[in-house]
Length: 279
Image (cartoon, rainbow, N blue to C red; front, side, top):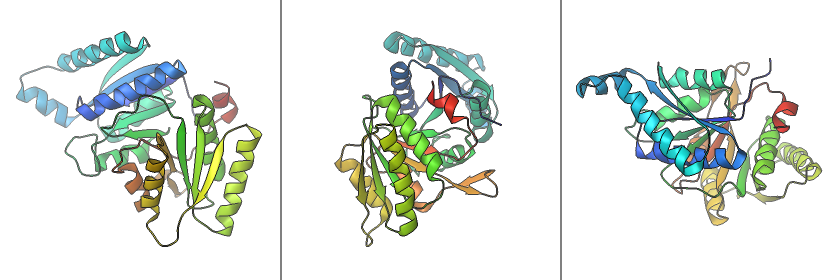
C-alpha cells in the first residue's frame, strides 16, 4: 500500500534550543515549498514529571506550543498546526507522521551524547522508526535552503529509492547533487543508474571518489564542509523484509558530524513516486 504524503512538515520539540533551531529550519523549508508546518510535543513520563515538579498542568504544554506557533506565523507567514500527544518519542512521532501524512520530519539533536530526551542516541531510534525521511539538524543555523547536497554511495543496495529522493529534493530546491562514492564495480553500476536518471531530469551533479586509505565518514564530512554543502543524504539498510532499519557506524558519524551539516536519513518504503513528484 502506498504511504500517504501531504504537503506538511513535522517537527517534534522538547522546547530546547536545538529544537527551536529545527523548528526555524523546518519553517523556512515550509515557506519555500508552500507547505504547512506541524509542531509536536510528546507528553511522556519526563514531561509529566517536569510538570508535576513545577506544579503545572498539561495546558502549559499547549500554551508553549501556541506561543511558538504564533511567532513562526508572524515571522514566516505560513500555516502552523500544533499537537500535544501523550505517548513516547519512539512510537508517537512516527504515529503522528503517518496520521498527518508528513512529507518529512525535522529533528533537532545536540550530538551523539546529550541529555535532551529527543536528542543524542535517542534520535537514532526516531530515525529508524520513521516512515518518512528525517532531517537531523544540530545547533548550526541553515536558512538558505539546500543548494548543494552530498549523496554518499557505499553499496549497490537500493539505488532507485536513493535516486528518487535525491532527485526530488534537488528539483524542489534547484540544487546540485555531489555524489561521493566508494570504488567498486557494483557501486559504479549503481552510480551509473543514478546519474542516468539525473541527466534525464536535468539535474546538476558531480562525482568524487573516496580514498581507500582513510575513514569514509570523515571523508564525506570533510568533502561536504569544503564545498559548503547544506545537506548530506544517507539511506538506512533494511533488516528482515523492510520492517526494521539499521544504521552503520559511518552513518552515525555523519548524522552527528562536527561541522553540524544537516543530514537527511531515508528509510526504504513503498511509495507512489508519481504522486510525490507531481506535488
